[in-house]
Image (cartoon, rainbow, N blue to C red; front, top):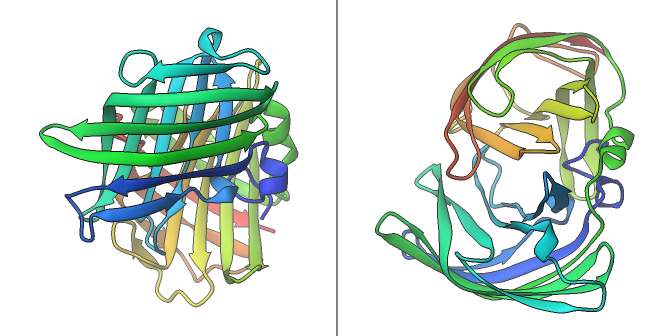
Length: 295
């Protein structure tokens, strides 16, 4: 895979984040979170330092959990130094969970995070916090992180997909990039190996502006998927990812429909995508498009 959300050696951030999570809203309540190595993000944008983790729990489009950390860049320790942060006051933390086929974000209200800066782009640390969502809460303990490398415009650009030809056009209502979307790069590729079942990736990517902003939508379809229409809230055969860099990150469908005109393959894919995206506890936004791509 050759885009930002796969391929740890190319994405810019490598390392690990783990934690024990007790969430009474799910069964079983105990979960050992191990962030997926190919979805680690450590970035500084708009004066804010962010760490984002994602752990895929199953093959469903929304079956994932993760952690977010945010603090002002000016409050980071110097190289060789260590700092302690009070959750909810000096650092923002979230545990976002997959519950009852939907997403829920638990914002940290108490706890502590320690960060040590080994080198300019190498941080290690530990963390514990309680996160709440309304009257519900989760407890995150024994947190451990060791991450190297910031995501940068260069690392995003170097991982652009193999070029295809065609169109990937639509429109966002709300969200970080409202208005028309027209991909400047399109691709359709088969991926397999490494113990991962073969799947087809269909992608539209827009690169614009200075400083550069990249936005993409990636559709992953399992090799043996049947039918032309997929319910994005329930299907285990297809997943859709929205990403915009540098100021937002990932979002995933809450619900929606993907329809192909004819069965897609490594040479062609055409159809429509209509869905509602959400990142953590941010407001939802809608997207509707059509695409027609040849490799």
